Amino acid sequence: MSANVNHSLPLEYQTEQNRLNILGFWIFLGAEIVLFATLFAVYGVLGHRYAGGPTPSDIFKLNDVLIQTLLLLTSSFTCGLAVFFMRQRDMKKLLTWFVITLLLGAGFLFMEIREFIHYVHEGATMQTSAFLSSFFVLLGTHGAHVTFGIIWAIMLIIQLLQRGLTPVTARKMFIISLYWHFLDVVWIFILTFVYLKGMVA
Amino acid sequence: MEHKSKYPVSHVVGFLFSLVLTFVAVFVALKMNVSYTIVMWIIGSLAVIQAGLQLFMFMHVTEGEDGKTNVINMAYAVFVAIVIVAGSIWVLTSGHAAH
Figure 1: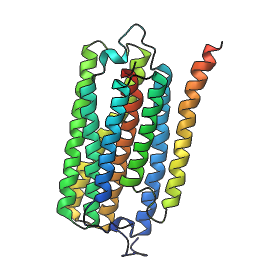
Figure 2: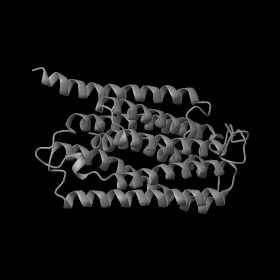
Figure 3: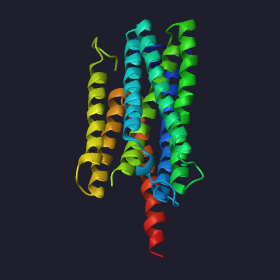
Figure 4: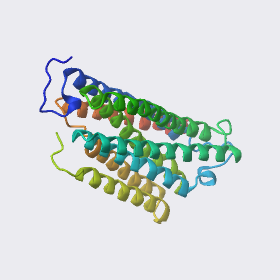
């Protein structure tokens, strides 16, 4: 693994193993796009079958959705900053921006869980209608990804503190940044094709 | 591929563009008085632009020696996604309604 170290590249690209891992993660993200596509397809087909239950415009709240959007969008930006400073070998700024990313992600999750609890109290549960089943499955899968990303990030922060910046920890940091940006990309489509679509008419 | 500048210019620009695109989409969806179809086409296009922005300005999809492979992989994933979403909706709604 230490063979073929190219010091002219950023840390995360220096070894063959790292380059393969990063390529592998891109291919995983391709599969994730397809996973979310199936859930969007289900929502696209079933999203207007209310079964006498609440409709999107009954339950969606623009302010809450906007706050979630801004939290996640800003966290994607701060995650990019973390990687930017990693490439300058600035551990302190890397950790600072990465922790801010995590806090914003946690804030997003808090808002989303609060939203779901609110819906359930209004009688809009997964069992209410096909619209709500597909809604909760799509949004829940995204939220589960964010949750997993937060746990993953906490473990990576511990490793960064223990080992410092090495080609291995830099590669792990770079890969989680791809994952985190990807979650924001999925959210853009959720905002557009679930929330805004539901609030148009 | 290494960031040469001292400041994360492309990240800040990408972030500002994303904010603008988000608010334009919200404005078009909720405040503009045009038909549902037109609104969906506009905000759908804005979403695709913003996703591309994230992919190129934040994720640097083209960088590294596997940059080309990444782009082909993403393009293929997007193609499959469009087939799944558009195809499913087409078959399960208009196809169903015809019978």
